[in-house]
Image (cartoon, rainbow, N blue to C red; front, side):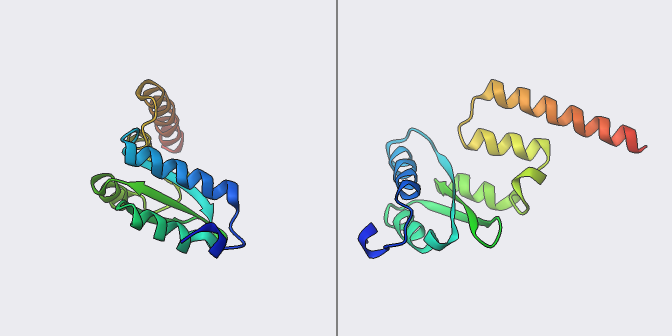
Length: 127
């Protein structure tokens, strides 16, 4: 398949997909999150499959999806807890997602502590 076969592909968007695949194949990262226009999903999935990568799809709205791409172990973990919008993940789930995506661990710890503190404060305000 080539981008010529899909005339309405947003070329910069597809270049991001190619970069994610390249980094995954080179071992730079173990998993990537690719937010994309739903109309390009068939092409993206075909490309990911052709590279022997695992994937999971999360619908965002009628037009956009999140495509998680990576090794089977990481995608299996994603399938276990990403069952709602990413902004509704618990602080623990958010931390795991960030770690799987290869985000800086210290920054993830800071984010976790901040989100967990907010969660604890909210639960105390309700009680």
